[in-house]
Length: 86
Image (cartoon, one colour):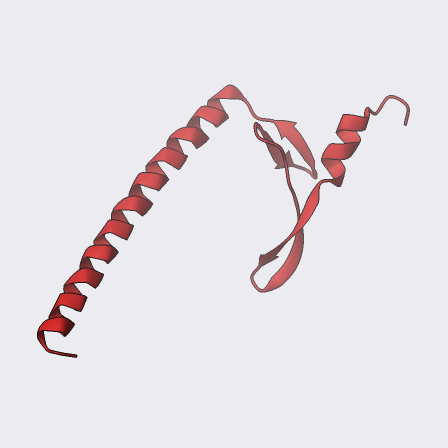
């Protein structure tokens, strides 16, 4: 027990409650640069960090474009309703 540092102990304790498929599940809440693996927070390798960063950017662009399309469709519908006096 003496060889386990306080930081390692804190990593294991940081769990938060999240809802998955309608049920409450306890999930590890790891600090940035770490990931949950086998119930502990471990440091991510540089390559994985890079892949996640690229994927996050790509996902943000996709979400932004789909949001723009839905806003355009909403404005178009509003114009049609206004033209029809609804």
